Image (cartoon, rainbow, N blue to C red; front, side, top):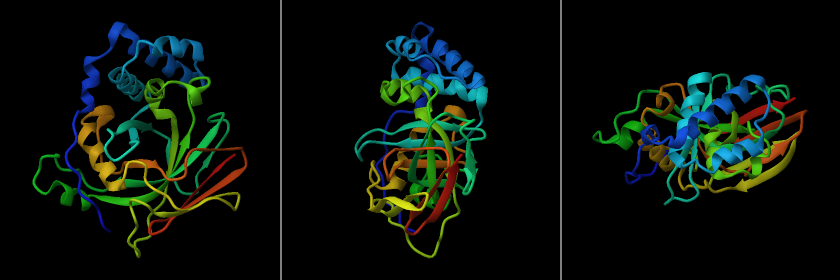
Length: 271
C-alpha cells in the first residue's frame, strides 16, 4: 500500500485550553450537553448569540467538554479544504463507531447525512512526530479502511450555521461505520474510484478526489496537531480524511452501500 510524504505542519490543538473568553465556550458546551441528553436540538438563536463570541480555540474547548460528558472518543473526523490548508478535527463519541452493516435509527437522530470516505484504523501506538522515520513507522501502525460518516447536528438549522459553531458541535458528526479492507489491491489514496448506492441505485460513481490531497497526508497532518485533545489517538480508533462523495441526506428506510476500489465495501442503513 503506497503512502506519500508530508512536511510537518504547525499548531497543536491543546491551545484550546488557553481560550474561553467570557465563559462562552463553557456556556455553549453546557447547552450542547443538555441537548444531547434530552435528544432535542439547541435553539439556533441561542447558538448564534454564543457563536458571535466564539473563536476556533473556543470551539475545540467545547468539543473537549462534550467529550468529557459523552466520551471517550472512539474515532476522529478530520479533513482540510486543500492540500495547503490546515486540518480541522472533531471526536466521534462512544457508541457512534459501528461495524459495517450496522443500523442507525431515526429515534437516535432526526436527520441523516452520509459521506463515503477513506479512514485509517490505528493498530499500534503512533510514535512522536519528531521521531526518526516517523512516516515509515506510521505506515506500519495504521490500516486504510472504507468508512461511511453519518452526519447530524445538535443545533437547529445546523446546515447553515457558522463554521465555528459546526466545529464546536463536533463538525456535525453523528456516527461512523467502517469495514475491514480488501488487501489484494493497492488503493489510490488521492483520487480513488468509488461507487455510492442508495437502495441499490448508484448516486456517485467514478474517480473522486480526496479534498485535502492524499488521504494519508491528511492523516499525518492530523496526527501532528491532535496532541491530547479529547484523549488523543489510541489503537482501535479510526480517523476519517474527507468526503469523496459530498454530503447526501437520506430518508428512513435507506440502505447505503459504499465501495472504494482497493479497500472494498462498507454499508449501513437508516431506519
